[in-house]
Amino acid sequence: MAVPKRKTTPSKRDMRRANHDKVTPVQLVSCENCGEARLPHRACGACGHYNGRKAKATKATAAS
Image (cartoon, rainbow, N blue to C red; front, side, top):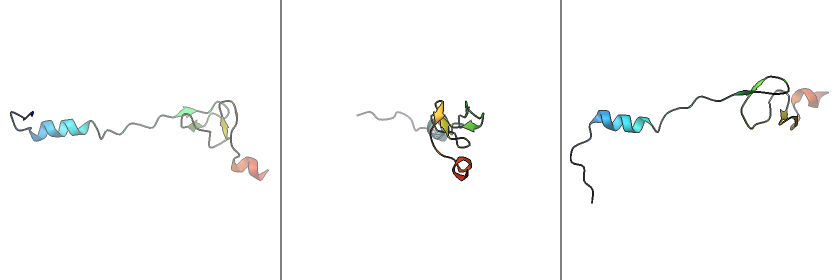
């Protein structure tokens, strides 16, 4: 059974733990139809387009 030869210092312990808690920035892409920022692989919230076609109804289109 493996046993540590020396006590791990708080600095080494914290550096090891820090890699798991990193927050990655949100990646945004622009909508091909209206140019609004949106999440990748999601329909645009402003116009409802995804992958070059209308994917969902928006409030603006539902009212008219």
